[in-house]
Amino acid sequence: MTAPTVTAAELLDALPALAPYARTATLLKPSADSPGPHRSSVGGPPLWPADEPWPRCRQPHLVYVREKLTDAEREAWQSIGRNRRERHRPGNARVLTAEEAETQSRIMDGGSLDLVTWERVRLVPRPVPGDGLPMVPVLRLHSRDAPALDWPPGTDLLQLLWCPQDHAEPEGQPRYWGPVVQLRYQASVEAVRPAGGPPVHYGAKGVYLPAPCRLEPVEVLDLPEQDELPEELYESVEQWAAERGTDYNRVLGCLPGWKAGGWPSWHLTDFTPLDCRCGARMRLLLTLDSGGDPGLNVGRYGELRVFCCPEDPGHPMRLNVQ
Image (cartoon, rainbow, N blue to C red; front, top):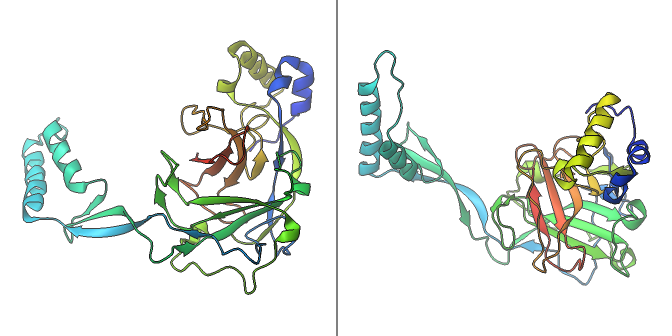
């Protein structure tokens, strides 16, 4: 990311109309370390009430399956291949007809085809065994390190855990694919380090197991992207930044990386505001990034964002990956 030559505060001084859109955020800045149990951390030792069971995931996991094609499916696929070769002449592309494309799509059924073994390979949801599989501690955040968040009364500790497996649209998360997440606001004086650590999640995906990191939080001003601003105001903002040799998006606005609060970027998809079931526009609570010292990989090396209701933090959260 290009280092900014100007600051968000200077931009707000120059364009006061932008001030109502500014949000205080905390860049968490994880750095490889072995953090103690009473520090904010990524992948550090968890704190959990001694009288509460460890959280477990009971939602179906996505697993790869290999399914042998029927004789009819194999013959249909080979017939399409023969027809394509027959149609191929100099100057003609080996294109599929609409009917052939529909047939191949039906045979693959959302997966891919192993032409050596003539097996369909695809991800399918499978129930988890018994009473579920233990979740993995990912982020522990104390209120002293992110005071700008709306902390529920009596709490000073936020912990994010997730199931280190892939899930397709788990309960309450439409259009989401990734680990199931659980948030817990707690009073740190009531939480203790579980003896021996949390239960082991066997078969966990390595890309969802964070390496231990301490946090070096920095409070900043975060500004929204184009679709969140009136058109004329955004044009003024963009012009002001360009005149000073910097890029507004992802340099002064929608700051990337591990973050508490602030504004989300929609850099991979169209702008997609998320609404709570109560009708309130949800706000960004946390951003977890791929790469860096924690070594995670969410989506296609992207960001996992947690959105919460500003009216009632007890309402269900929403997850999104960019």
